[in-house]
Amino acid sequence: MSLVEHAEIKEQDIDGRTYRVLNHYRIISKLGTGQFGKVLLGEDISAASPVLDTPRSLTNPKLVAIKSVNRIDKRQLFYSHSKGVDTTTPEKIRREIEIMVKCGQNHVRHPNIINLLQVVDDPKMPKIYMVLDYCSNGELKWTPAHRATIAPKDDLITQVLKIHKVTKDLLQGIEYLHGLNIIHRDIKPSNLLIDVHGNVKIGDFGVSLLLKNENESNSAAPDKRALLREIFRTVGTPAFFAPELCQFVNDEYDFTDEQTMKQQREEASPTKLLQSPKKTGVRMDVWALGVTLYCLFFKSLPFNGDNEYQLFKSITKDNLQWYNEPPKQLVLDAHRRVVYFYDAFREFLQYTLVKDPSARPNVAQLKEHNFATFKFKTEEDKLVFLRFNEQFLPSPPQPLQPIAPPALAALVILPAPTPSFEPPLFPKKEKRSNSFSKEIGDKFRSLVSRTKTSQA
Image 1 (tube, helix red, strand yellow):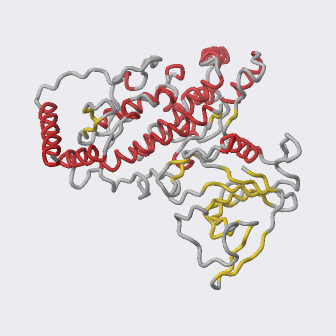
Image 2 (image 1 turned 90 degrees about the vertical axis):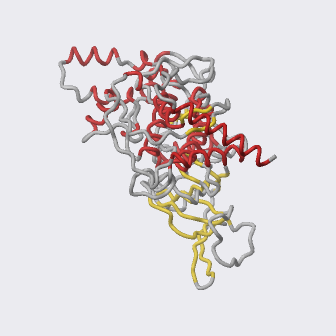
Image 3 (image 1 turned 180 degrees about the vertical axis):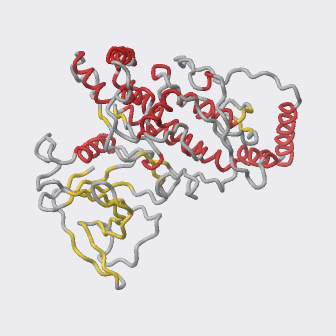
C-alpha cells in the first residue's frame, strides 16, 4: 500500500465523453454510495497511452474501486513523517485504513481479502480516496428477491458447489485475519464481494478490531478487562451478533429487580466466558460465519424478531429453524467415503452456531470438518458425481419449506471440539430399516465401474 499526499483531478475526453481523472486513475462510473461518501469504478492508466479507446471490459486487471471519504477537516488522515493518526478523522475510516494496511503488510495480497492499494490523502482536497481491489461480480446475495450468487433458480447440485466454494474462501480469509490478530466483527453477506474469478473476498473493516500480541503489551488485568469491554461493544449488524454479545445488551432491557440483574451480570461476566480477548472475538466471528452460510443456503435468517430485544432473545434462547431436507445428495469426502452433503452441511452449521462460546470452535478446527475438507480429486470424480446425482434432483427444483425445530438440544449445543481431529465428526447413525443406503451404494459403485471400463 502506498500513501500519496498530492491529489490532482482533471478531465479527459474520449469518443465524445468526458471522464474525470484522479492522478492516474480514470473514473468510469459510480458503483454505490456509503455512509461517508461514494464508491467509484476507476481504471489505472499510468502505463497506458495518453488517449485510450473505450473503457475496457470488466475482466480488465487495471480496474479498481475508489472509495471517496468526506473529510471532516483539512488535516491529513496519516502523517508520513510520524506514527500518529489524526484523531479528528472519523474513527470508522481511520480504523479501516489501519487494519487494511496491516492486512497488506510485507506486500501480501491475500486472495480472500479486499486489498488496499493506495490512499490519496491531500489536505487541500475535501475528500480522502482509498483505492481498493475491484470485484466485478458484486456482493453476495441471499434474499429471495435476488438472482445472483446462490439463487433459488439454481438446482441443488449448483447450490452445493457454490456454498462449498464460499465456505472454503471465507475460512481462508477469516483465518488470515485472526492470524494477524484482527477480529472482523461484521461478517455478513453484504460485506463479502466476488471478484471476476469467482473468489469471495472479505471487506469493510470499519468496526474491526486490531489486537496487540500478548508478548507486546502489558497483560495486566485492567488492560485485559478494558479490551474485553471493547470486544463486547455492540458494533456490526444485530442479526449476526453472537449470543454472548446479545446477553449483555438484553440485560439492559430486563425489567427485574436490581439484585437479580447484578447476579445475572456476574454469571455472564466476559472474564467468566473466556479469559482471552482474542479467543472471545474469534468465536464471535465464527458465529457470524455460521449465520452467513445459513442465510446463503436457506434464504432466511436463522434467528429473528419483531424488535431488537426479541431478536436477541431468539439468538440466545431459540433452537435453529431447520428446513425440509432436500433429496439426499451423495458426495465423496476427502477420505473417499460416501456421505450425505446436506447432513454434512447441517452439522457444520451446528458446529459454528454453538451458543456456548467456550465450546464454539475456531477456524482451524472448522477447516478439519468433513464438509470443509470435501474435495474432488479429479474432474472425472466431479463428472461421476454430477451424473450419479441427476436421478435424485426434483424437476423442477421444489422450494424448501420451513418446519418446526427439532426437539433435540444436541442440534444447538455441541460438546467442545477435541484438539486432535479423527474423521469423521459425524456420529454413528442407526441402520435404516430398508435397503435404501445399500441400493444407492450399489448404483454408485456400478456407475464408477462402468466409467472406468469405458475409458479402458
